[in-house]
Length: 136
Image 1: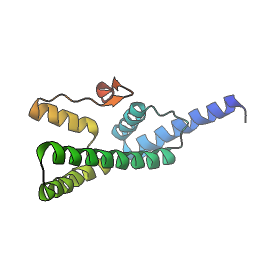
Image 2: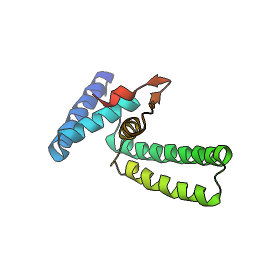
Image 3: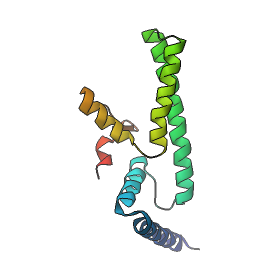
């Protein structure tokens, strides 16, 4: 298969994928997937099944590293003991489950913190603030 044929096949598969998502799950889901792919810089030639698997693995790894860093900061800086650290870990995992199941996004969390606490946070990609990318 020539490079041009491969590119055209990828485009056709991308259009078919978009049509399937829009038909089965609606335009909102298609918009969500498009925002996610743009946010992480994915190209259309990636197999959607592999993308979803890799995205889930990356989400779990991100959450694990955030939990580790949070626990160490709470322990070292705020003198949290075993009970409070364990309570924090359990609550963190409950909140993370909402993220893993797709009930909440990073942008949702940023907006909640900003609205409720007036704290502005960033979601960066290679030191570029991509906060507004979620609002395509």
